[in-house]
Each structure stands twice: as structure tokens, then as C-alpha cells.
Length: 635
Image 1 (cartoon, rainbow, N blue to C red):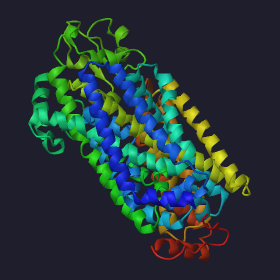
Image 2 (tube, rainbow, N blue to C red):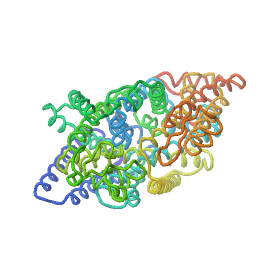
Image 3 (tube, rainbow, N blue to C red):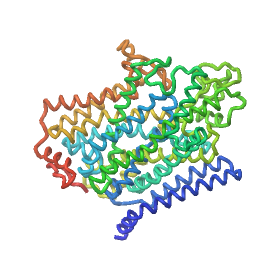
Image 4 (cartoon, rainbow, N blue to C red):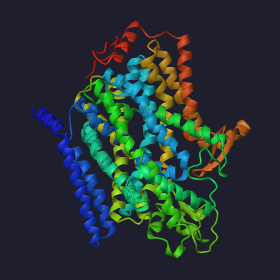
């Protein structure tokens, strides 16, 4: 009773609590700025930013610890729409959005907008096709819906396999992001940094499950959006005199265009669907729209996002929270193109053409072995100093940094921009804290989704339905820790480009789950076998093309001939079928899933009248769900 009263008081005072939290964080940043003014070393400031923010998240996780099943899996279904939108924004805006998206726009220019359009447009699909109906269904996980809708354990198992594959690839990318930030600002080895960051992830998600993750994600959203906006607002004021980067970065683009002419850049920053020579290229256009499709459909299929809409008190609040999610995501996505433009302008104006001996110290910091994200590849021995220079064309050795000699990894653009622009180190630390918040918030949601699928859908639903609450939560926490350690090991050992890993995760989820989910809601006659075949074929086709194009490119070229193009990326020969980049491999899996479900339905039994009645009931906002025989009532 005391716990319920405390929880009720907490929910009633959410506005005051997070206002105090935001004010305290602003005071903390100002305090660190004062320390920097008085000469406190940058490394100390980095430690304070990293450990104090992780400490706050851990404190929220400890205060939100719970032994209640509904609180652990769905936050007690008590999260108001506004705060669920904010938590979803943090859950959604991972290291890929915070760290990788502006980097993609920096290098791809107009073509990088595919990420902005795809990820934003996906929420329209979530709002119209998914969120309210899954909330009305009223269970804990996406495999719960698949198992109930398509007749039991076969569908449930396939949904779990797709969920774990997509979420694991996604969470490795987040831990790579955590490792980059921790390594740069704490000065430790990248592999060790991945495991240090993991501590922050586990404290938040292990103790309180979805309840702890929700309130931590709200706190993380506040930090990440402040951290993303402040440096670009300052740069906008410096360059244009107006601190509204979203409206003023056109001036930066004009200056970039002029500098591109001077520097001899053939493909301009704003050129749409252009090849390296700057002329229109149909393959670029196809890749642009293929990526948008995969990201949109993947957004509407990712289990860790969909399960957020299980946490609201009602169906109406689930729909409202989708709107709030879009708003909070919009604030960052609307700013990313400006971030990329101002960062590129700083590089063109203040880095390119400078003597190697006069380059700023951040190039050495970001380019050192173990991090290797930046390089000045002018001298013949540049690869010995900057590992990123290995394998590229040799510089001319004239002691002046040319554009072709400057290397910077896309994942370094956002994190290094405050130093590129010469802003105070406290701003760089703030951006690092924001990137860490983005990566941790998404990693928490993903690990929770994986652990819940294993403990709830596999262990409880299929192995031991009589397991008590305590045993179920222990199993979930142990599995969560095991998966997290494996993901940290993979991230630390392999490393990777954050954005391509995340794009793969979207294609996998889109191919394996979207057709079964959307047709499960909107095609009530779809029978059990059709849903199973849809997931099996969609997932199988996607994984087949992903693995063969990524790891067996030359063999695929030998077998299929001219329709395969070999591209040297990520240290291997990757195959592009018909010129399509394999980060959009869902372009093969998504239609295969729909076709498989349609064909299977032609030859197998349609859903029972009871199941069709159940589908009708979840499409109506009001009233109870009319469960079909064999379905479990919600806990």
C-alpha cells in the first residue's frame, strides 16, 4: 500500500521532479565551465561528465527497482503519454541518431537525408498501423502478439528469433558508441571502454526493468537534446549572427558551395542522387528510396520501440504518445542537417590548407591508435601515426593538409565538432554526455527486449508456465546480464560503423516482423500458417542476402555475373546486387514476407471466427479484448 501511494505521488509530481533535474543539470554544466575557466584539466572534466551522469542514471535505476511483474515488463502501464513520448524519443534516438546521422549527412550531403526521412516517416506507420492496436491487445511483448495471433509456439519462436537477431545487432552498435565516447574522454582502451560503459547500462535495466528504464530514459532525453542543440546553436550564432541553426544553416551551405568550387569538389554537398563526378545517377536514387523504405518499415517493426506503447494507461494515451514521440524526435532530426553543415564549414575553413605542424591537438587525440577516427595523411609515414590512413592513397608530403589527405570517420563528426569549432572543452564534454545518454537509453531498451523475449516468451510461456514471479524476474535479470556481456565483447572485439549495423537491424526487423504484424491486425482472415510462413520467408531471405553479399561477395559475383558489383568497404569485398547497397537488404526480405503470407493463405486455413472476432475487438479503442480460445488473459 505504501509503495502504491509513493508511486502515485511520484506520477503526480513528474513535472516538478524533472524540472528540478533539468535545472540541476544546467547548474552542473555551469559549474564545470567555471572549473575549466580556473584551469582544471580536461581529463578531470571528462571523468566528471561521464561518471556523474552515469551515477544519476544508476540512482534512478535503484530508486525504481521492483519485484512486480507488470512493473518490470510494462512499467505498471502507468506512464503518461507525454513522458512515454519522451522515453520513446530517448529509446529511439540511439548512437546512430545522435552520433551517426550528422556524420552521414556530412559525407553524403543530400543523400544522407534518407536516414532523416526514413526514421521520421516510420512513426507515421507506427501511429496508424501498430501502436494503438498492440496496446489494446494488452500483453507484454511483440512475440506475445505473434504467438496469440498465429496459433502458438511456432509463431512465437520465430518472432523471438527475429527479435533477438535484430536487437543484438542494434545493441552492438550502441555499445560501440559507448566505447568510442568512454575511450576518448576517459583515455582508456576501446575494448575496456565498452565494458565500463556496460556497467551504466546494466544498473539501469537490471534492477527495475521497464519501470527503471522508462524514468531513466526521460532523464537521458533531457540531457541528450540539450547536448545536441547547444554546440550547433553557438556555431550558428558565430557564423550567421542568429542562434537558430535550423533556419540559418542555408548561409553555411552557400559558403560550403563556394569552398567546394575552390577545393575542386565535384559532388556538391546539396547535389541530389549524384555520382562522384557530380552527375545524376539512377542507382543513387534507387538506393536513396530503398533505404527510406527499409528504415520506415523497420521503425514500425522494432520490438523495443513497439513495447514502449504497452506502458501507457490506455489506448488513447498510446496514440497520443506516438505524437509526442514524433515531436521529441523532430527536435533532433530537424537540427542534424544544420549540425553537419556547420561542421563541414569549420573543416573547410579552418582545417584544410593548414600546415601539418600547426594542426590543432584534437586531430591527434581522435586519431591515436585504439580510437583511430581522424587522420592527417600527408607524410609518407602518416599511417604509423594515424591508423585511419592505412590502405588509402599516400599524401604528397608537402607539409600542408589537402582535402584528400584529411580523413575523419562519420562517427567522429558530432563528438569532435565542439573541438573542431574551438568551443570550450566543457561543451565537448556535454556532447559526450549526450551521446552517452543516447547510446545507453537505446541499449537499455534493446537488452530489456531481448531478456524479456527469452525469459517471458521462451522460459515462462514455453518451458515452465508455472514459474513464480520471483523466479521469472531472476531468469530475466541473469539473461539480460549474459546478453549484455556478449554484446560488449562483440563490440569491443570487432568494432564497426554504427550506422550500417543499425541499418541492418532495421532491415532484419522489417523483413521478419512487419508483414506478420500489420496483416495480423488488418487482414483478419489471415490464418496461423500464413503468419508463420511470412516470418520464416521474410527473415530467411533477408539474412541470406545479408550474409552472402557481406561475406561472400566474390563468390556471388562469380555465380551471378554482371548484376553484382563488388565494393571494397569495411575491410572486405562486399557485393551490391543491381547496385543496391546491402544496408538496404530489407528491400528483398519485405516483399518476400508479404508474398509468402499471401501465397500461404491461398493454400491453408483462414483464421477461426473466434480469432476474427478478437481482431475486430482490438481495432476498436473502447471496450475489452475478446480473447479467442487458448489465449491467456493479461496479467
